[in-house]
Length: 267
Image 1 (tube, helix red, strand yellow):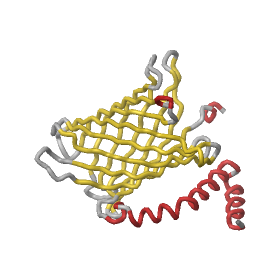
Image 2 (cartoon, helix red, strand yellow):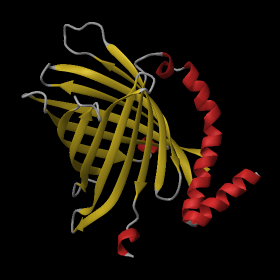
Image 3 (cartoon, helix red, strand yellow):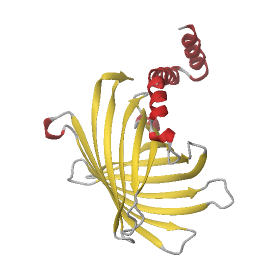
């Protein structure tokens, strides 16, 4: 208790009340989750197999422009990093920018043009780059069928332009996601949220449903505007129709998201 009090006073002195409260919540969540996460890591395929990976990302959502008859658009910035081989091989990074645009007359629907710069083997002399041009269609529904479950759908179309190849690849992806508030767990005045999703990839070059990703996790509010998400993902991948042996891999997912308030830019 004395250690926690000293920690809070130190953070408050250095950064102020808001950051202090966020730091205390994050420390509390770490204490709460560490025993369970540690035991799961010991028994999960992520730890036991070489295919285990760690995916981390930071997302910032910024209120952008508001148009008559269209609504408010949102600028979304993302940075992602991935490790494999028991988190020892830092093999991929990406930087991404997009604009989320509501579709007029269609509540819950939006379009999102995206550009991503993807780096393979970052920091290595032999690193390669891929430019990804995407358009995403989103749909969100709350309390589907009168339940407390929320449903979201995403369809992504993307062109992949690799600097090590003269050919461009085109593929599409479909993801469905169910989520539900956990009313027994609350931080920062908001409920924790459980979610489960499944995503399939269709590759036009090979005419193949090449990848399936099944994932589940929990979103944990740190403040009114920020959330950390912890999850697990299982991926199955096929290279061609002749490849009868699918490759599977396992990922731990860690994501931090901060949504800027409108008042942040008006004050």
